[in-house]
Length: 346
Ligand SMILES: Nc1ncnc2c1ncn2[C@@H]1O[C@H](COP(=O)(O)OP(=O)(O)OP(=O)(O)O)[C@@H](O)[C@H]1O
Image 1 (cartoon, rainbow, N blue to C red):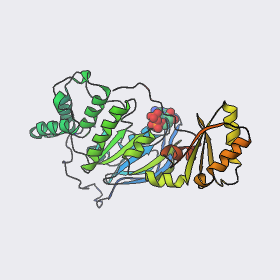
Image 2 (tube, rainbow, N blue to C red):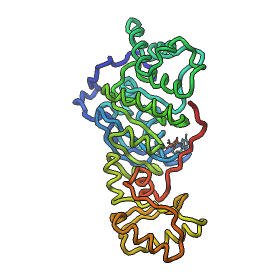
Image 3 (tube, rainbow, N blue to C red):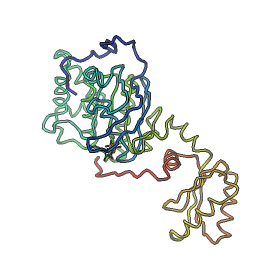
Image 4 (cartoon, rainbow, N blue to C red):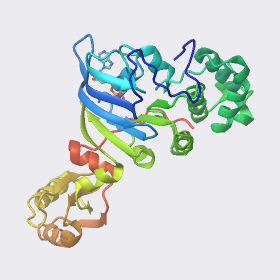
């Protein structure tokens, strides 16, 4: 987000024209709505507050409204309803100040493949108005931060997908913004490259930077985020820390593996739903069989297995475990989060 004069590295002053006091929230959202020109309601009245220093996750399937929301925060789209303050500045009336105080890593990398790693960062320094005499130090610092110092003089076109993403993350940090937006930064990366990026994001957050991350990967949200919100069809349907959300699912999960086709699964699911010992259970059909989440899953799990056997359903395996974020998602939406991995890059 190029600007001429940026806020200094540690300058978090709020000298907005209205002279507002310093806000403790990095992001404050009140009734945000975003309807596109063609009438698509992408964001349908969301409220949220992200305190400074937090690692916040915005989780949802494709098309839920994550990118639209992040674009409003980064002032690339203007809200059609509600109010949003970022680093204390209003996104409508103070958009320049918002842009100066944030870093934004978009879904598509913004690096120039013909430039070297160091040149890409230096270019970003110019674009963000980092003073010339500070640029060399900044370039070295950031190359170190994302472990690209040893390939500083290599052209980005020679880099793997994961290295390009790391370089892209570095370019979003040249002006040392207190808040960084990461829009699905690991989509399409293999697990190893993904893990490495997580390390850098943790490092950036440990240095005090607030992070707002969108992801369709439940494990990513679970591993990284202090708190998260789940968005579905433009509305926030759950929020809290990963452990709070898991607790809300209630009880434990009994996974039952079944022999046979979909008919056996359907019958088993029907039996589990009507099973008296499982009040308020949620039952999902999975690839292997069924998953039953209930307060009494541990206590009465074997009773269900007996009931299944009595109904001639063959159980080939079972396991009782604590809920994961997948179960949270399943409980909220009734569907597993279908992640479209796309191409896999190293
Ligand atoms: N420029 C646009 N004009 C009209 N509708 C749009 C536009 N951009 C996005 N949408 C629609 O708005 C809704 C939310 O899209 P958005 O890209 O914000 O979702 P997302 O959660 O980021 O998904 P993805 O992971 O696919 O990017 C979708 O229905 C999408 O088709």
